[in-house]
Length: 404
Ligand code: F6P
Image (cartoon, rainbow, N blue to C red; front, side, top):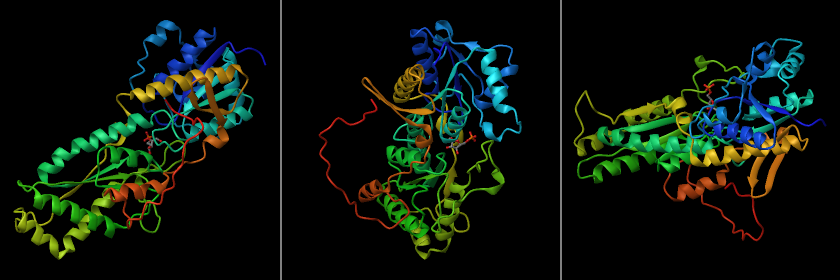
């Protein structure tokens, strides 16, 4: 294999924390090894159109220093374009022409499962590329850049919402991104000590949620000397009802990867709770005992949904994501120069760079629901009847893969 002289960097899918650290990790490691790196802007859309770009941005030391790793988003830009779906029979030739035009020998591509599937596709067309795992959804592998930043933001927003929830004695339902898995809702929700967390891995029984809400929230208000209380639910956008059906607003349409845009889980939860509050004879008694009852005006507690949307993946990157992004970006360069292609950086642990075939790495990782019953034993509701935590002890004797 001819030595790699220039690497193109692509970020693709949804943006999130830590991506700028990936870019800097690639650029700085490449520079240290005497390799140039350039930005291919706007994800795979940019790769497809590279041949028509008048110039690309070289990441020399000065340009790299102007990228702020602690900011979320990506200096390279994003799109949700799947190359195989582009209606152009000559698309792979066009991409190769673009790479040739700028002397780009190989690619480092950071993204999630859809992005990874394109890495597999490009590799099969003879384009050397390495995948750096990125997804706030955390559905790829034990860790991907972006997850920690989003979890922290979800936890902070949820915790902040408690002050307004408490002031108005409202039940608050916070719907968060995460697509078909509940990693961020779970970790962010636990981080904010939410009362109830609803994730796609557990079909929701709303009678269970309602009863937990009543016991927790009614009790909280009644015990308070100023009769104040709130109840916090964090719901993953991909939540399913008791029949295992996902609940989202059909009118939201699909994204460029062809996935349904998920929206509406929070609204559905609110409606389910309101329906029960309106028909429960104990509610009027609670409202009267707590001194809140106002006939015809305020007869049931208010339930509100809040949808932070893109706020959970913008703004700043956590220090953890900067660490993970830097080292996995650098590791991608070592994998490229060793002639590897079509693989995903799993982790860097000391002097070991762990990697896996990208076709394997992009298989969906769900929340391990064994852990849920532990949180249930601590009082959190997950929309199902509480299950006993079944555990086993494992004594660690060998060194295990660490992330930091
Ligand atoms: O995959 C990351 C993610 O943030 C999902 O959690 C969410 O469903 C989706 O992207 C939103 O995508 P977009 O930014 O294209 O609306």
